[in-house]
Length: 242
Ligand code: CA
Picture 1: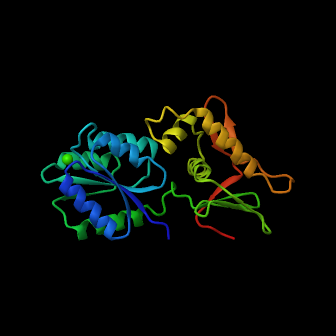
Picture 2 (picture 1 turned 90 degrees about the vertical axis):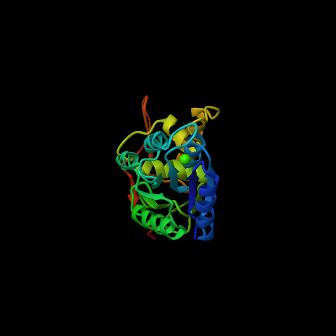
Picture 3 (picture 1 turned 60 degrees about the vertical axis):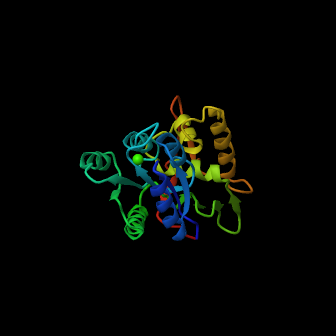
């Protein structure tokens, strides 16, 4: 089973340490951030499953982090770590789309119970599309491969998988290159050119063609001046089928 990856954004070292240790002891992979800016950058990286977010943070406060995060990953589970007596912040956090909160001081047991509950609830979210169908082909995002009838299998890179699953999850709209860049390489990554996205899309289109030739449906449409969009032939699946 793939290890779930979490980001802990907390500036108080003792609390951060406690949270990180508890999560690691339960088998989660954990990334730490001690300020809001760094936390946001880590949270939008590939493969993050959950964010534990303090509210009073240096550089960027927790609510601002949450607001920006929601624009890029609307359904990424977030649990707020809040101090007693800050009910307003807690309510604002929930309004901004946090999934749950724990009040400091909290026990490791309580924290882990919340984490498990939020992960369970988020399992069926549209963002986590496990698979898609394209004509006769099945695309398995977890195994990162395209399976055609017979024995033909085409492997996908981590980036290709991320782009394709993101397009499928947002299939009702065109997704801009900038949004894909931010989603894949982080907000501050102006070093990566939007042309990089075009290259990945070109490679994906080649891989999505039926091996050995023959007609195959178009998977990714180019929407002028807007970006890319999953075609109607690319349908999300709730589970991997054969
Ligand atoms: Ca704090």
